[in-house]
Image (cartoon, rainbow, N blue to C red):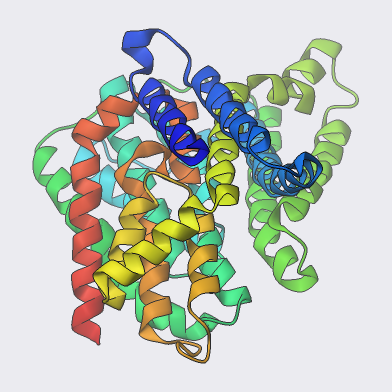
Length: 421
């Protein structure tokens, strides 16, 4: 009975998030209530509340690592923007053609997300587009394509998506092989939606946001923070690889380093200038509502995980579908509704390396499906949640206009993967 009540609460919470605007209720509130209620039901029905509390603290540690990573990345991007760093990039983009600009953004996002990760790249590229595109509608369409491209780019790299990283660390895939095997299917995931969007935007131009003139000192400071910020973001996966510490540790180190540089850069300037460019000011500007929303959603999902609902679902799919690729496809689509991390973790526990050794096609397919399936719903991936916060993308707007593009790309990626076998 408790399991049924938890599932009902989760569904109602999800509906409240989906209909945020008609209800006039912020999605963060719905997510937080859903997360807390799911854990409350779990602790009420158990005979060992202390054990449940310890389990919750363990999950909170994992959730916090994502939230601190998100906060660090958003703050660094905000510092780059406040110093005019994005002006330097946008000044190099001369085109006002929507199709050409879309191609630039899509492929830049795709390859950057493999180098950095899909979450950081989505934040950077969405911030970049918001500095160039005047129309809100244009920014929303580009934001949708950035989510698809970031998730597709992250799937084929062991550093690009948390689930691919999990499989790499778990010994299910090797770095070189996953890149070689998934590069073409991942490209298919983004190329098909991009071509559809190019046809939609054919012949259209966009009105560029007017950039304010900067002094020579401001331009110099902007270049320093831009190059330093991008270098520190690239440093995060390198730090993780060298130290084996979680990615948020590298992000916090990067934030601390850029904080020191900003302090020295402006120490002799007037107080109002120091305040305008300070890290404290940047922290005030990041979207804390999105971070609280993410906290609530992940709390709800971890409650389902602790109840054993996700593992039962994975087992049910395995026994019902009886086909590795159908199972992988189903898990990929399911990752659009619940977090892909517990789904992949459940799969790692269900399928042993003796049955499916390293670099078995099932593991590669699982990385592709769970990495790209989350694009079907805006809150189905960390990149989607971040972009939702930056551009305030409505859940239903995304569902009506972007989800079908993501699903077409998802199907194209699966087709290309199967043709490679």
